[in-house]
Length: 205
Image 1 (cartoon, rainbow, N blue to C red):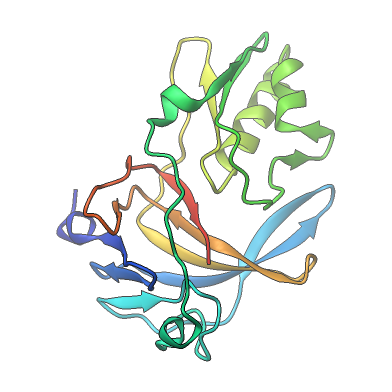
Image 2 (spheres, rainbow, N blue to C red):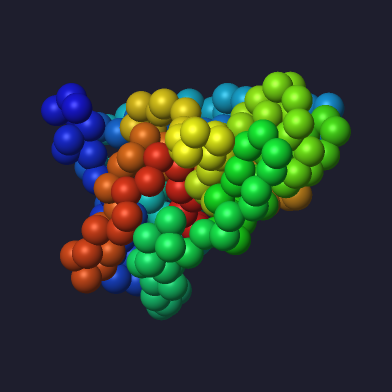
C-alpha cells in the first residue's frame, strides 16, 4: 500500500460535512444511458487538494464542497448505516455458473440493468460463459457495493480501484446522485469507529 493510500480517510462529522484527507482524487461524473444500460462519463473538472470538506446537507453554494451552510440550515446528519459486516447482512443468490451476494442497499445508479436483463437475471441464467461474465461485470459495476459476484470456486470478484471519489450527477432523473467512493478508503464515523472497509460504496449527500 502506498503512503497516499495509507493516509486516505473520510471522516463523518456530527451534523456537518465529510472531511476528506490523504490527497484522494475527486472527479465529477455523469450517468448517461448507454443502450439498455448506463455508463459514467467525465463531468466538469474539480479542484484537487490534500484535504477538503464535502457538503452533506445539500445547501452549499459551492457544491460539492462545504461552505458552512449546514450551520444555518440546522442539518440533522444522524448516521443510519449498518455496522454489521457485509457478509453477515447479505443474502446469497445461487446460479448455475456464478452466485451473487446482495445486501439490499441501492444507490439507484441502474448499472445493474444490462442489455438483456438485470444482474439477477444473468446470475439465475448463468449457464454459459457469456452470461457468467455479464453477471460478474454487472455486479462489479454496482457503485454501492450492494452486489458481489462469487465464482463457483468461492472467490469474490472485485475490480481493482485506486482510491478516488466521484461526485455523480444524474440528469436523466434530474438530480445529483450520491458520492461514489472507490478503492477501499476508510470511512470514520462521527464517534470515531471505522466502518467496514469496502472497495465500492456510495455516500449520501
